[in-house]
Image 1 (cartoon, rainbow, N blue to C red):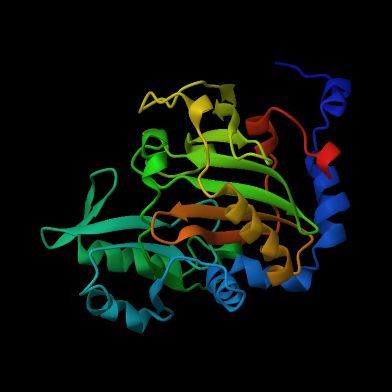
Image 2 (image 1 turned 90 degrees about the vertical axis):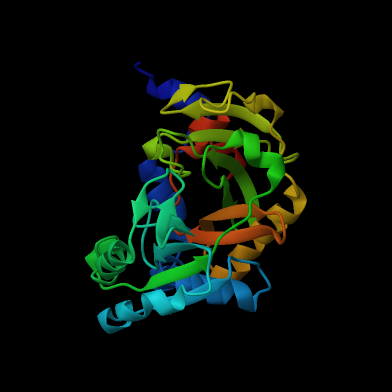
Length: 286
């Protein structure tokens, strides 16, 4: 449906050009990008600042080390393997051991050889920004808060918070679905739920750009969603400004039932779909 420019301005919608020039270029020094474009560096920064993140089981940085993958995973039941410099959820596998192999949340099986091949692809830069050589991170699985179990399908829901000069200004929760293959990725069919920045309660929800009221797979009413430990989560998100030095960034957080809010990654170029999920624009808050 056609939307007139004056209508977008009326709603305070931040467009890509204005975001790039007025906020990203203005507040984010390019020399700081490597700190947030690399999940391993981000994790180290977070730990130094006392911001919790998923425990690191191991890191594989060379093709020779791929042969050690079985040994690294010998005492591990469940884990996530991801590219350090990946984006958009590409290359991430969440697996549990079963019958001598590995199984994804979707039910599909992988052998150790499959996992080694995937790891080799990560190292070769198949999923990295710019196709540059990468490192494969193996992390402990997140045990997400059971209060959120009916709001997501076979995956961990995460929370994106936009932080401008140290102030959280807008947030959304991304809920995995069957169509998103258990991943909290809006472009693959996850549900985006706008979150009231003051209370942590749901405001609005969309899937594939269309407003929804219930989770498509679990049937749970999305208006009932309340993010646990909301104030703690916002405090952690705000600290990421000091940690990264970036004046305009997106923080991706999860809620672990044992450790509370945890940082997954930082984004120096956060997308604009959060405005659709909230049903309002970013400009009045910036």
